Length: 451
Image (cartoon, rainbow, N blue to C red; front, side):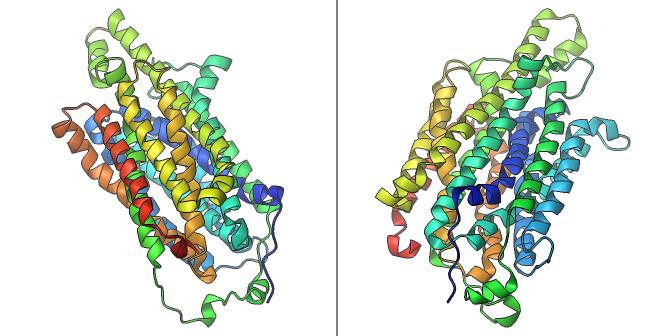
């Protein structure tokens, strides 16, 4: 029987390069969506509700795209690449529209229009993203699985660094304003989204033109029975359930970080009032110099959160390159366990940091966990699921990413308001505890289940 061909580093790089653009889009969203929605009028208690959009669309879209991409074959674009392209086109439109939502208001307020554009953005990201996981598993022999997902994770990190740093770079290197004076969204954020749209499309096109997929005839030669010729039932392997529980606790912690870091930095680390209070003070007295200084500091801290997120993504890009070597020595499960424990400690440490510069330290810890979260679960899973249903299984596995985000979005806001007394920083501590639990649960994954 024919075997899958081992690919060179650059072949795997080209195959994964589109993820750089996708993750740049996600980084712009993660670092700025809360900020944009706050500018449009959302308060801290409602922020997590707006973030429901992302996991809900992922839960719906990814299994559907996985199902159809398993059954697709285009002589021009292949099996997975048609979905890359469709998602990229929609993503570029959404990236341009979100920071301009106030321009489309008429009957509906800017906040509601912004939420709708955020939903379009997440839908399009998921259309492009889901087939990428399947593509790596499709094209690589099992012996290269960890290496493939590690390279993909490194490119994810690079894209996220660029997207996270971009607003700060535009302001500090090119003089683009980050002020809210006379605008709804800071110009540096708006232009960052425009650049993100261009890079997103360019990266996807690179993968489309540089990557080849196995044809239906070649897949038959590899022993992969096409779906229209099989009646196999959809059975979820045990390893998928165990990894799913680990994913649940891991992603709950990440979601808390993405939603509440900006608010925590403003209100806990720098003891600033909420943006609502600052804006109300300026409405009452536009010449209030103290309120203006608080607003300026808040805007700068918002840019700094992008830097922090870029740092942990940069660390993940570097650490991802060492993951295959570490995994060969201590195993996939232990590699993931230690990474999650380190990340959980990092989230808890955010509570104790005295200033924005000190916040860099916990980001180093979180970057290690992020690299492992993006690579190891998929590496452990890919060898346990049928090759002819790679797309749909990867889509189903996404449930274990979206479900914790939905739970967090529904309950973290009330928890912050009623249990934590409005102190968003405690949501970061809670996220750290849950990530540590995820690390401990890796002890229940046995080597024979991975093999």
